[in-house]
Image 1 (cartoon, rainbow, N blue to C red):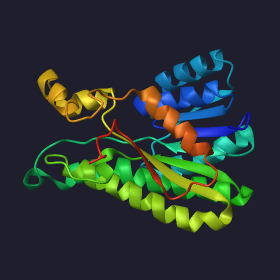
Image 2 (cartoon, rainbow, N blue to C red):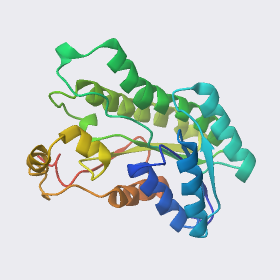
Image 3 (tube, rainbow, N blue to C red):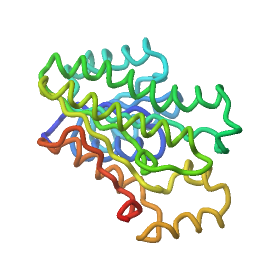
Image 4 (cartoon, rainbow, N blue to C red):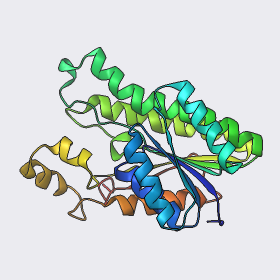
Amino acid sequence: MNTQQVVLVTGALSGIGRAAALAFARSNAHVVISGRRADEGRAFAESLRALGAKAEFIEADVRIEDEVQALVERTIARFGRLDVAVNAAGTEGESGPVVEQTTARYTAVFDANVLGTLLAMKHELRAMSAQGSGSIVNVSSTMGSRGAAGAALYVASKHAVEGLTKSAALEAAALGVRVNAVAPGPVQTPMLDRLTQTSERKAAFLDTVPLKRAGTPDEIAEAIVYVASAGFMTGEVLRVNGGRTAS
């Protein structure tokens, strides 16, 4: 990666987003982190600065367009440009069969995962198109290409993220901007614990992974950094899941 690129990470206060922000900071990038918990965000920005990075926290809710627009504008005002955007904000929602789903549950998942990704890309693409370059990496999931009983809303939202990624890539290619996604399998984060609920269910789930373990946030962050800098890649989804989709 070129030195001192400007990187924006949404959903940066936990899990994969946090690991990605750390990875870019260690790669000598200027990093803007975003999330909804201000105290935690400011503390994380301070820890990134302790690594030698120039880092700023900007509070924003990706479901609210005015806040997303301000996030991108403030990033450019601070650092002058936007080279890489990692859209990691999202939620798993409430598990349950389709017949038990409600409009409220749908809205909670799709506003965070789909609308949030759409709004982030809208304003990131405007900024990157104006400068004639840029790379966007959306965070999808193994569930973005298959089904899962009891997780229909989450699965559908990640299918939508991958569709948005491919469509935006086709629109942005002529403008010098690349758009890709990284689709993790099970990763050792609080979300995995919430989804599996018990240690027995978690063990059974991980037994379906050929590598017989969960990935780590750092391993997914490595993939995100790679995709962000892969200059001839656009409209692709890199699946990083321990072999779970190999068969």
